[in-house]
Image (cartoon, rainbow, N blue to C red; front, side, top):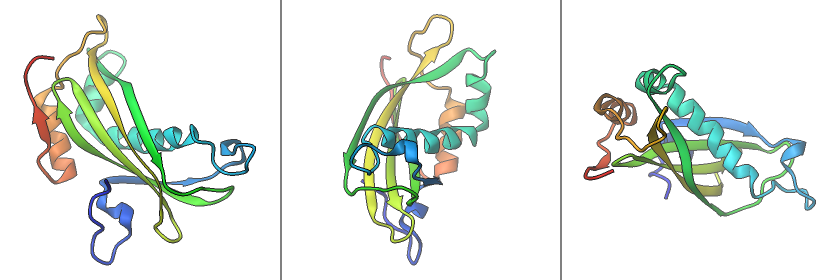
Length: 160
């Protein structure tokens, strides 16, 4: 799933947004490795940073805006264990925009050696804030994502 590693670069540099995460005590389970549910939090940390970099997202999702997004699906695949104080990198990119859905892809890497710890996907839906009904994302938002990603996205139109 991860995009191709840039020549001579770190594997997470193939993603437009990545952030360091240090495994905390509260992230561990009784087996002393990161609990399976915590990886979704690591994904979320990268996703929040991603969307915070988009001015059109800020405009349409702020408190007085008419649109917002909500997570409707998430999946992940565990590849390796992570342990207390380990430095990880959580990376995210937009995979596609389908009508009112925004699909994201994630990878979590060991910062020291680039090993993939986990990969995953998530889907958010764009909704009208008052009626909580699905809406298509504004074209300006899609264009800003494409510019930010440096590539054209798969955008599927049709009914919501």
